[in-house]
Length: 371
Image (tube, rainbow, N blue to C red; front, side):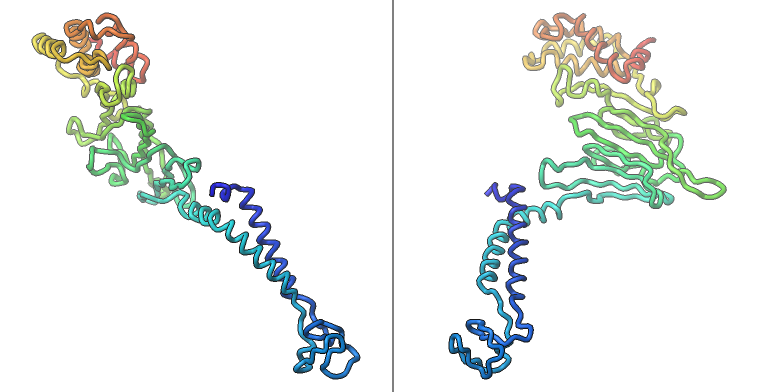
């Protein structure tokens, strides 16, 4: 029953059980003889009386030793046992639950790496009750000194290179510079397609005394979920991700969100969007016309008006081809695309830029398209 799990019931049962235990000990110790001769049946004081027969009840003791027995309070002992059993029955389920929760709640080590004396540990938090949940965490240690602790809905030591592909930056580089980090810690907020925060750490060894230190080279702010790739084949990894402005909205569902690709490469100031890697050759006029014709001929989407056009135009903007994207918007526009967000292609185009400008890469995307 639920009432048995109530705190007041639990502590009442503990109190009653404690009292019953103390009463049992008191009754068991009883009234000691302390040299007195007493009848083992009625406990009449037979001091000064010779023989083994009680003058009060007529009981004949078998030996002199029987006259020196302790007088235990059996009724109190029986009542104490019954109370103890009742309190134990009331405590059985709550105690089982508390023990189960205690044994199955807490941080558990799930991953660990050691890089030149620097230890990085990832923990998950196991819990039974929903109100006892805590975020997983990553800790960075040198010896017994904790240098850094990070937590989020999901944590990972290393950088993802794709689905079921090996992680990078788990200490395999002894001097991870120039786009080859020593350690990457990835935090995920748990949203659909959003958002990851990435910490880039370097392990540094002093050339004279050999002391080891850890520095944070860069922190990539929340972006869409990304992967680490050597995009240009120069041996350094770039971070390929999405602009979080288009993750799960604002005009589409999470599943149909447009791809807004961002490629971050290592610079002296840390990871930054790469103009040279993001720029793509503009589509020809014929290609734009064919794509516009294909979008116009598709079945209208009444739930997400214009979703096909959004999915086609946004990637063009992030490849530096805003002129082609604007041309596509006007050529592929249909009246059924009009809705609460826009009433004509001009408003749709203005809304695209309004969302881009409000994001972390708005200025860069503007510059990418300023040819």
